[in-house]
Image (cartoon, rainbow, N blue to C red):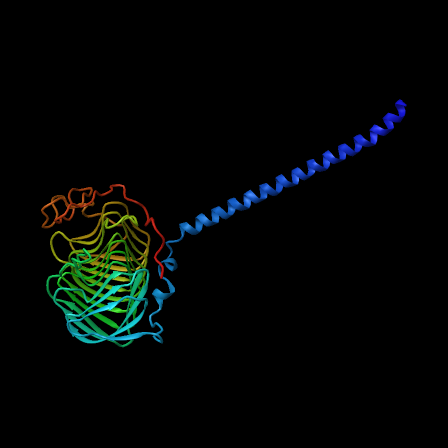
Length: 389
């Protein structure tokens, strides 16, 4: 009986051992697969991080529509400007502006819409209101038609839009993103600013002659230029939180700053970055800066010629990685912060405190400026998505 019981137990034990070994092997395979999956996931996450880190590459800044210099006009609506009229745009679409008028404003109030204006031989002169006023839109494109000459002028003091609580101050004034492109010419004359955007300005083409008592181009967030020809005569050539120049030909004659990066918004770090193009800056005498950044200044390429008392003024880090830079007739091989982030005293014509730089008070204005950062902030760190069409 005992032997019979042993004979019965042995096969059962062998079978149980086999089941246990099979389960153990399956667990090992599952563990290996999970480990592989985790490695793959980690790799994917690393690749995603690298993509995000390179999102400020040039191709990410200019959408296909930004770069389209001759848009499709198949479904475009032609609008003749009329003396004394406010032309209201409330829907997305492409609109061709033509004709000559005075006291005429094209007003855009089209929430979440993309609106494109093609300037084709249009000439408007106003006394106190913008010629193009974008109150609400997702994005506005102002495109100069091939072979066209266009002229937009404001001669007097800008009146506030009290109904919408907006203080307008430019011939083209937009609260949305703005793209300038095309193959024609646009002449702007202003008693205050030439072109102002409360978001981003993108330029990919066109020829522009801007004469302004205030700023030639002004944006709160960024101004990015990949191409185009500019001739700017103003108190300040360009101002934005982040100025990025990748190409184009830009001539600036200014009495305060040629390029000025200041803390107009918190979307980007304060930075002037020049990667290409041809830039010529001629400044008036006195306390003037050719390139003035209340953050960092980075030059990676391009041809830059500056003639002024102080070619470079930055509160953060100045880096020269490439390009050809000439200041007052001498080639520059290393950026020198002439004014050490400030101007050693009270700023120009200001009654209140200006921007606090490393050397004292910066350009004074009528309002209190921002506190500079002696160590600076490296790079144009985006807090929001890269501009898109």
